[in-house]
Image 1 (cartoon, rainbow, N blue to C red):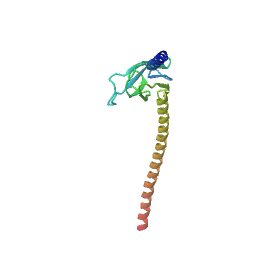
Image 2 (image 1 turned 180 degrees about the vertical axis):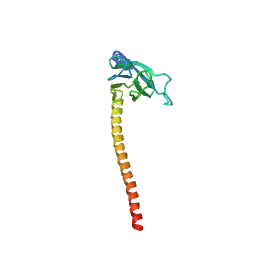
Image 3 (image 1 turned 135 degrees about the horizontal axis):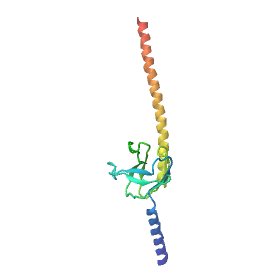
Length: 167
């Protein structure tokens, strides 16, 4: 009985240790023009960002972030800017880091896909739904502005006609 308990405890410890050795973010990005990514990480209370961006080496588009964070953080991930360019001017991936969860990033800096653990898969699903709702809202706004513009013009033309009929 003690041996079985010991084996189960050893297996659990090994499993936890392996999970802790997994990088929080890894992935492959296409169309990068540099071999370095920069990652801006929010402070734990979201009151701003850490002073210096995290530099991430990229080889043939592949990268891993081995730095661990112990609380929920928001990140901006972009490539090292060329001289005269601003950070994130060529595209940016915005997501969250959740301790114990692994994000797998793919695509490009402009058209990214963040998957991995169940948290990131569900977050990607919510992002798609939000983008669809945003596109629909933009369409409604355009329709509204067009109708409002026609009404304004129509009411103006009616008032001119009314002026001529009254004279």
